[in-house]
Amino acid sequence: MKFHIAVLPGDGIGPEITEAAVNVLQAVGKKYGHTFDLYHGHIGGAAIDATGMPLPPDVEKISKKSDAVLMGAVGDPRFDAPGTKVHPEDGILALRRALGLFANLRPVKALPMLVNATNLKPEVIDGVDFIFVRELTGGLYFGRPKKRWQTPKGWRAVDTMIYSEGEIERIVRVSFELARGRKKKLISVDKANVLECSRLWRQVATDLSRSYPDVELEHMLVDACSMRLIQNPKHFDVVVSENTFGDILTDEASMLAGSMGMLPSASLAGVPQEGVRTLGLYEPIHGSAPRRAGQNLANPIATILSMAMMLRYSCGLAKEAQAVEKTVIDVLNEGYRTYDIMDEGKKQVGTREMGELIVGKL
Ligand code: IPM
Ligand code: MG
Image 1: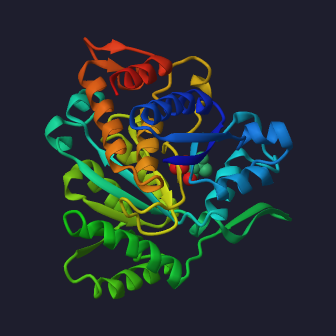
Image 2: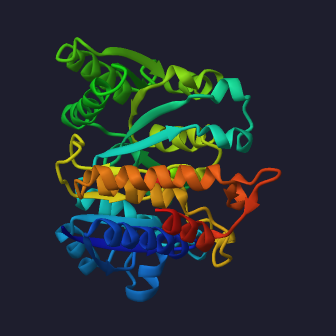
């Protein structure tokens, strides 16, 4: 089969991790007889440098027409200065929104050979395997007004958390569907003791649960959730939350897997179905790690596993996706590690070498 993939490396370590993932993708093509036609485009700080815009219109257009988008990371301290009008992050936010990718799937797995890479006791994280569903196109990230202004008493700023019933319903539905295919346990995270958006969220989730009598729904407050993730992560199977809570909690959850460099993500416009091809954007959950950039240090596994999710959801290639995931595990079992998951007696390799090891083993 033939696929069109938009490849957007972005900033910092983005180009290095994306190159490693693309090499693995091409190896999949060779082995299984598929053609992946790649379109390389700029996003984030790289796009601001090239065009003045974090998401150039042609990049958006080509992403829309592709079978999938594979992204590295965005973010560059050069654009952090106060008063800066355009930010690299605006590029990815605009692309998520333009493609209607409201469902962000972030699987969290504690792999047995990486237990020492975490700070937690082996018995706490052993067997952790859940999926975090983050609402991706609403809430504080996009709500208006969103601005900063001067007053006689100094500067003020506002961000707006806003959700409609429909936005909540569709993301909770995705989560119920996923829960149905797993342990039939869904945890919905909110702050319903304080926030009006969360009260609506809880009500919509409860109403929808009537259509899923086979799935057990548990409501959990976000502060309690952040504690439970460390205290008893095995309690989680499918978790759903609004945008900002999901951003924060998944960075925390990545520590269960040993490193941010291990967590992939898929951003979709509906319920994921294996074998049914749907446009999606695939990116690691981590950022552009500017201090690690250009040093052949970064862990490319989160991006490679994101690419595997792309094979599964946007290319309908479940067998190939599984082969990539298994190969990653094999290479880790052989003792190869990037710096972020390095452990005594293991062999430390760089971004490129980790990619090559996975290509070689595939
Ligand atoms: C993520 C990142 C992004 C987000 C940033 C880079 C805008 O932190 O994908 O989790 O906040 O969504
Ligand atoms: Mg984040």
